[in-house]
Image (cartoon, rainbow, N blue to C red; front, side, top):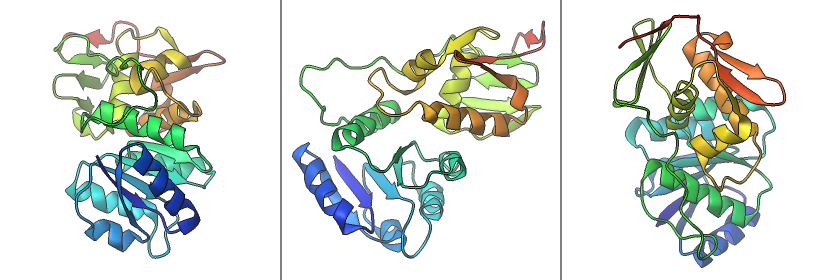
Length: 242
């Protein structure tokens, strides 16, 4: 599997390239956004946000105009805004620095499994495969208030207008919509939308909920249940046949 590593810091790039090579990945390393946009096609992109010539967010935006290659953002930034913007532009995951090589490989495995791009090396031998993320419930479209969810086409309309959701945002909404009003624990959502072997902070879930609320135009649609998780709130009797 060919990985494009976009990272300007050699102290990170060199050991990361060597480490991923030990797991069977072929890594091409570039140090600028310009080089990333002109590099040969890869199976996955590891994208640092702090590049010398352009912001990694802009690199992500440009990559998404021509390719559906899985993108994992690598960032030392603590602000939620950068992560939300990156995910809304089409990045598939993010990883905060510092991180372990094992965690990164686990994230790569999870992202590629979800996007079904290609088989990847396992972190440990004999590990079972995870269940598919967010199983679809029937082929018919589901109407919840002014939100229409079509699992067959993976499209969401709000008030008749198509809303562009990232893959994980759609999976999250579809999972919550399986039982509107029911409370889904954080772990249940992570297991269902991300991966049964997900590594890393559950802050990823909050970032995606925030982005989903913004895109749906109604923050109250997804309610936070303190210390438990989230639930999809819809007016009584609003679920109509498609």
